[in-house]
Image (cartoon, one colour):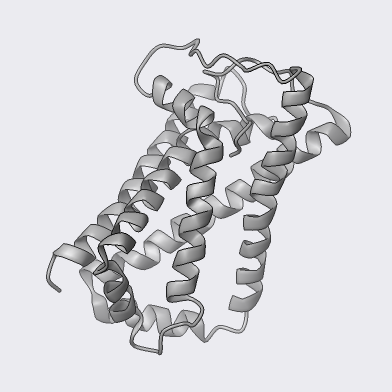
Length: 228
């Protein structure tokens, strides 16, 4: 998932070999780690809507775990590595093209191809929005962390701000859009995409993008507008 990993709708660039391929692999691995986190994180947020008491118990137990700082450190590393390597790879590809702009035409037809091409073309801006959202989110709800039993109250207080709600909504949509093309791009970078499984990987990635992006957006809207 990177600003420069193109979906099949982008121009074909021969995969690099040896050390030149390392940035693409690093972007793919760090991106898939972050996707796994998003799946777990959304699963942990759902009880906030359907069973607030269970959500508070889950949050309290999670934050007492001795391994949590290690997991958070690994996620922070992935979060730093992902855009840094994506930028490095984008610059390398730009130099290889002589800084000539790449055409963004889809060679496939069907639902979602235009959106995937748009997501690839706008990945730098989408990534910037995601980094902004994460910085604000961490400052609001992680540093400092709400007191035990007050996680949901703190989240709802944040969402009462129209600006915060707009940012959370935009962050949710940006995450879904980035994943819409990034899942396929990551598998291509890892050498796991071929004509036999391409359609399946593409479909799974796009479904996951819709579930995650739509899920986070729906949770934010329900917490804001639906009485507990």
